Length: 369
Image (tube, rainbow, N blue to C red; front, side, top):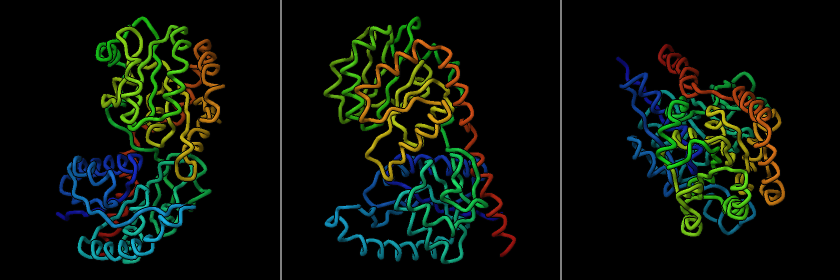
């Protein structure tokens, strides 16, 4: 029996890494004999997260191009050349049946080299505004899995598969976990719960805004579960109490967190947005303005345009947050409409569908050999 060989590349942020791991796990579930090797950027978080997930990884000496920061780009040409040479050696040695890219600058050299050497490549784009690496590679790809409509603005229409983004299996059914979740977070089941998530490191503006409006939130008779992030925990931990405010640096048990939620405030990273669509709770999205090509804004706008979320730009949160929160709390009808609209975006079986899309490419390779 043939052992199929895959190179999977993507990294720099969790938004590129965790979909890559989910795809690898699904490949292994379907084909336990598959051989999978990851490629990332030396010194980036994938070099830690991928081995923790049980996979081997090679780190390229590569970094992104810093726009407007000439000094930081001095080594960029050398890094790019060295990474391409390293990718040539890796592809020739590993001989992948398929090379999969989930975005980020680390995926550029290895997917480009694989395509030059006649190996099929497949892309997975998480955001509604396509990343520059995937846009460059698109015409060389045999297929591109996307999560948002109108992605033919960036990619050839005949290569697009609208699969959605991979989500954690634990989130596919959370309603039965509500009692356990209230106990875990020591919450009052008789009260509505506001959940605030600023990412693993945290979001300063969101944290400051929540702290400033804490009395107003309590006045709405809401209890609060607040993931403020590791960078800010020491500053905001003083707000934690036994009654109605629970402050955490990081929460691993996201299924339980979402099970407690009646309203969720979150950034608009692709992975978070995809999970929130599956969870189906009313959401207020505050996109980070400090991301490549402002992609979080476009992720949030895709949902808000369809009535699936309330989007507040960070520059406006001081003026808009409490007003929008009050309106949402006082309108059960709006909450129901939002939940219905979120269902239109939900893709709970995205990982399986992505693997189904590229499986014929593997078979095609075999028939041509």
